Length: 376
Image (cartoon, rainbow, N blue to C red; front, side, top):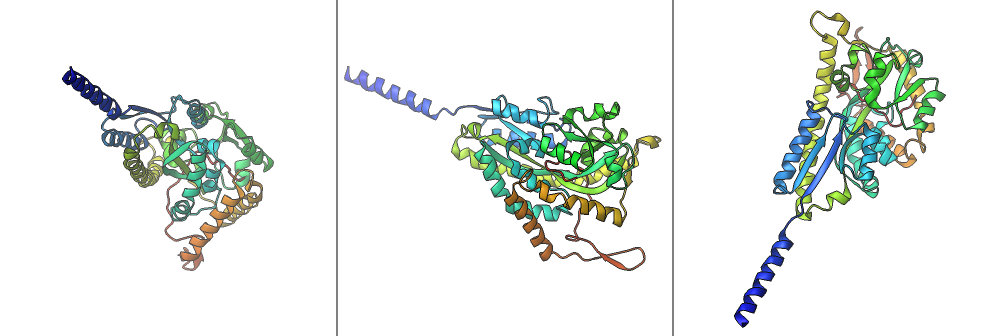
């Protein structure tokens, strides 16, 4: 009898231990505007495969690509309703979670990627803390090129842009009013409506990246691009902390490291692809000149005036569209970088020299879609 009781007790103990060791499966649905045939998607897919390996198959990442759950504001609403658990967002969605991200997309604040990387590396911990306080963990940061203006008519200065019906993301009345107050004809829309509105002449101009313009074939409907680096197009991949904390702590570190590696790989690849996309669009399709992108470059006076009018709106942005402390810190760090990396004289056609702003290792990549907190 005693032996039977001992055996039963051991069996119960073993069963309890087995239950304790059983790891809960975690399903993570991630939304993204990136299409399934894009490099963005492939990198996210690879990250999901690494997560599954690290977790021994208990973490499953399902990607809803191509905007099937809507654009970024829709994705944020779904995050809050917990119908999805993660998202790769542009600044449009990130800004709906926390306004601080707009500090990295202040128009004409940065001249090149070196300046952006220097500032972002130093300010990211503050931004991540703000987002964490809202219930989301930043898995990685990214960018998709430079915001430039694609249009149905050439843009040689701000007055030309003011004559066009300009796309702006719906849902940001502060930004919309700032555009209008500076004489622009903005049309608030969801990003998923851009192509249709270009086809029906509902809009004439779109601030977007070269890579997106190529992917969505926008350049066939808006054949001109103004070569002004308006702002870098910032993005980040986030996951809800409620879901993340379901994963065993011992696995979270390696999974976060895998996500960061994926973000870095994607950043470098996207920057290279942005340049390639611009080259592809300017060459067009063989025998179809009508589908070639035409780039307009502002003369120095027009560019200086564009910058002057943009910077004149900074005081209106500070505190309203970008937290004042972050605005000032970004500006301070940008200036700090420029002191450490003074610009070298650029050779002019006549053999004289002219000094450019910022560092000399300026990237030629172009494009980006949403500028949360654009100046006008």
